[in-house]
Amino acid sequence: MTTLKSIFLAMLVSFVLSYSVAVHGEKRQQALQLQALEKKMSVKCYVEYLGGGDDIRFAIGAFKTPNHVQGLLQGRKVIKNNGKSNKSIFKVKECVKSAEQFSSSRAKLLDKSVAR
Image (cartoon, rainbow, N blue to C red; front, top):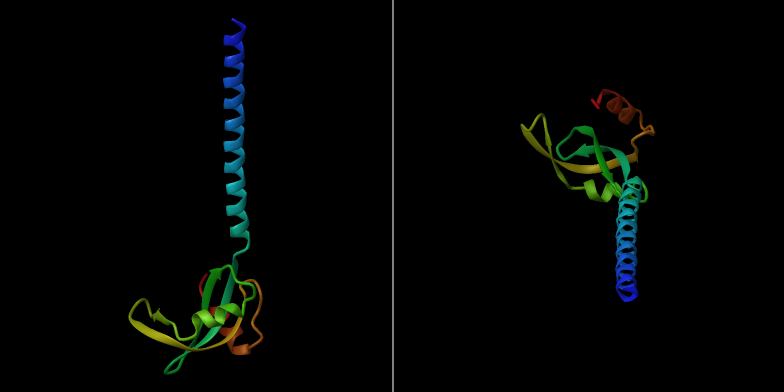
């Protein structure tokens, strides 16, 4: 009878240990996902289009600085005027975090008119 009890106790202990390891692994995975979300940066950029015109464009990603977005936007085609026209970004003039202000007066004016 003691052998049966010790086998049962060993099974119970192994079940509890495996369950706690699984729970710990799941919590660690959730913590890593939360850290990844916290590292994302919301950026706004003042851009000039090929053929004329300018605008404010937005990006969210794991950027080290707002200026890293410039390379991503340069030359990219975007849809304007509710899908009626495509434009290519000719030049990214300035990028800042979304909560910050642009230094350019034209960019500040455009930023005020952008719906959020």
